[in-house]
Image (spheres, rainbow, N blue to C red):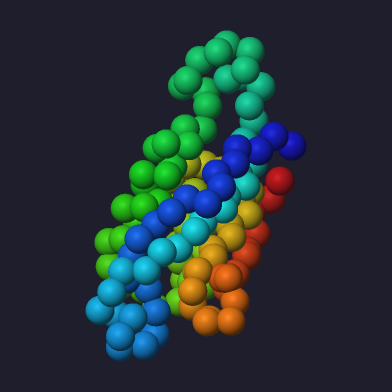
Length: 117
């Protein structure tokens, strides 16, 4: 299975359950593994057959910053749903990390897989 990868996409957004968190922007780091058949893009060297990581990154940033969200679990599901419905990605692994959320940890996070490879 071919995959398109995005690592540590940095999204500044309002995220959290506490009132003080709802007043500030925090950083989320997003890792994506997206199933994508790269054969046609490689054979033709034609962008139209590729899954554009810039377009994906811009869309996900817009999605996650459009309104405050409380849980990183919600963020992960929103991203997976967007990739599968808007970009026709058949399988995705989404990892969301929230640096600094727990003072004694570098980051906390969730990871989900959706779809079929």
